[in-house]
Image 1 (spheres, rainbow, N blue to C red):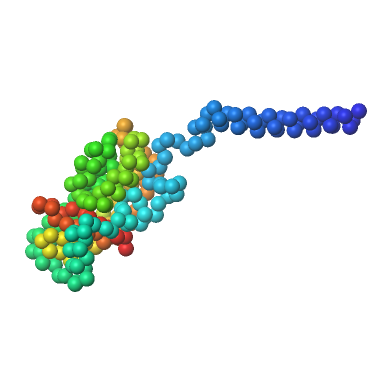
Image 2 (cartoon, one colour; image 1 turned 90 degrees about the vertical axis):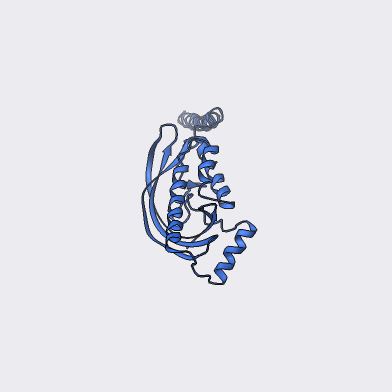
Length: 217
């Protein structure tokens, strides 16, 4: 009698486990989002890992190429160690435009749609690097996730080489970033502080300097 009782008990317990497992699998099937992360994931993360200060989505260290003509001019300037041939007023304008370009990038990440993002960023970036930033934004802006940048501090900006048409700048700056709800127009989530040391290539189009490439140092 005792043996039959324990046998029945074990069978019932085993059956309960099987039913529980299949029930969980069935629930996951009819509720595919039940075990998935929330739609508005942290925009400062890519591929599920938190980015380091030199790998954040606002700085694209992978884009160092340019259109053939522009790239050859910049490369030639570097190889020849071309001096700065701009006047002090022109140098000040170059540095001012570079700072404004970063400000434009930060503001663009609060745009509510991709056409607006592209239109804003085209005032600061040109060529492959512009398209790279657009591809990054396409992962987040259509889902209502932007970025809010604050506490921007420039530690140092040096002009390595420059003439009337192209220039290379060495810049060090810091900033703080949060996710930004584009619908509510409000920052949220954890703040991330970033330190950036970058070499940026620029060209002058009309009267404005635009960024064409970046290399994180």
